[in-house]
Length: 405
Image (cartoon, rainbow, N blue to C red; front, top):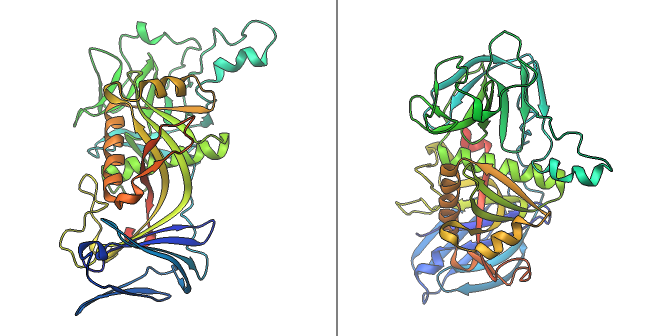
């Protein structure tokens, strides 16, 4: 893989860790590395490979330090940036992505089928955090005044939760103020006929691909998960997004929003079946990832679920990413730690469909294996609150603008 490198840039410090992977294939051969402001060059014997850096990424060659060679990794060195790297794409919150009095189309993210067509919301309102009712005793000195209250959207409402949208599935008729609870719901309204209700439970399923999109909360309230539906303005054109790219983008957006709003950095990823699948510790959210695939015919180090770079992106890929530590909890793994996090008020739960939790776990695992071996785990990280060894992974927030074109 001649000429391949990985650069992890931190915007906050304007510094980068550069890993030149070409040196890993020839551990005994001398390698000469030339670091220029806008390019890198690797010489080994008679071969010479060069890679141009993306626009906006400019290095300060005189700041190179910490050069070392690690078995299986290649050459590591740290370098400063000559100027601030390109700013991250503006990430709109889930609430900001929907506007009142505009028509939207809900697409199944997996197959692109239209779930709901021309849905107009009169109000788009944020929901309180998932554990708000558990804190009522701390707020009130008398019995819980909200014990019999439920937050269900009326006609024209869209309530935005941490990982889902609550919408009213009724028609133009008035929606009762006290909807029937979901155990008594015998059916739910379908505006377009593109989703079905499972006979076994209240799962809302795409009619074409049978993917779970959400669940019925009551006879006239549907919960759609943000990882399962792609909501686009009715007047715009729809272009499908690769599955793993979409899941990574939405999960990263949820982590960013909650860490910023609640100053929490530990999360449990739960399925709709109530099981905990992953423990996630957010390390940083200002990472700019640059990777050159070199002259290798197989450039899939960060190719997940068939997501490949478009030809216009060239041999160098650029992503905004969040860096996390994680621990899987499937098959009773890390049960004691998961129980401890469950009872910790500083840990925030995120609920997704169980199938999506498994997809996310696979994405994290593939991201981990794509990293150089020395960057795949972090030892003794807050040993009292976390296990001695945790998997390290990078979750892509979005593709760079150059790659989208």
